[in-house]
Image 1: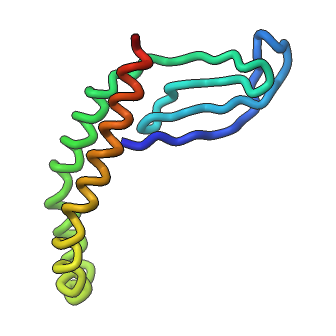
Image 2: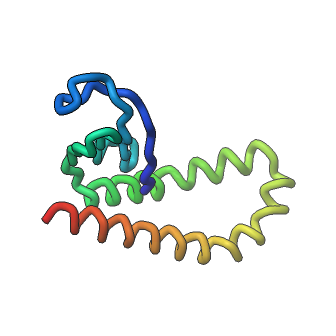
Length: 112
């Protein structure tokens, strides 16, 4: 699950003009919009657990195809990198779980 931000110009109904806004995305969906001039903000409700479930399901479902594709493209490179990836994977998973917990906490507390 990824949270990203983008700055753009939108029409602000409080400022009555085009002003810079910060837009926050969660997995490609807009979750928060804020005017940088007047600080007016708008939160959109996103079911974070639902998004997380579908992201993990998609990753698990497509993993065999992704490994097969990588294997067929370059077998020697795949075999060379495989042991390193096996060792690093638990650390990457730990980091991802930690980030997901932070996002779940952030978005579940903003619902209240």
